[in-house]
Image (cartoon, rainbow, N blue to C red; front, side, top):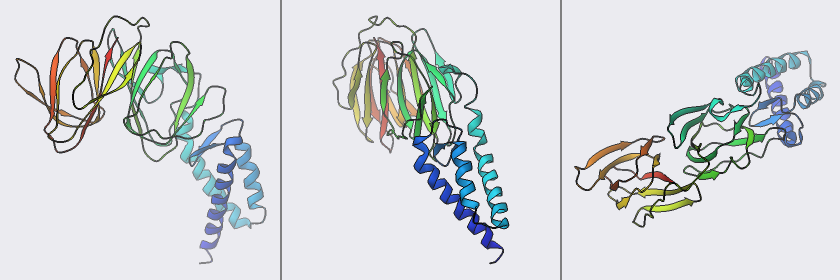
Length: 290
């Protein structure tokens, strides 16, 4: 028990310091590293460690030093992603281009726990679908980090970055990985296509602006969505996978196994109905360009 006591005291001191840093993290002026789930300042760490160990013995100081060095070592991989000047979105850490054509580009964004994307530049209009949620904080270049947030899975957003570019970094401060599908639109002149409405059971329109129209399709096992007409090119993104049968007039029915995070390019001019033949709820987001 006597041998364990210095370790216990050192651990208690480390927890106390971490709590102090968390309470003061939002007042910092320069982010140096991430401890736990908040960015903190190196000067804050040093000042509070000095105060915490002043009344401890040599053994406590030694054990506390070991714990702090271990903690610093654990966050070094996250630090590596924050170095260097801002890069274009498609060159950013954990942003992987996976599809591109004349109309749009698709990136799979998968940021592990306690990792940062590094600073990157958004300059193209962007549509995104959240596939797997996580606790995040964002930081615009030259500003202090924003408060942590967590969007629910399936969140759909559109941002007109072509009108106001943004340079920022994204930090995953939670225990789970973040997974996002990002679709950027290189063409800045809309009006080439006219998507048709989808007024059938299962589809809910979630977005309609000058660039795109988007719907969420949710089907319980055994449910069907009636025939729709795809008037413009677009994408299908899988939020919650399952097994479907797709019916096209004049063609044989086709079964499909849809997996979380998958996506499919969809050509204009087709008609289709969808039936969930699986055992779980199906959720997809479909968009058509304008």
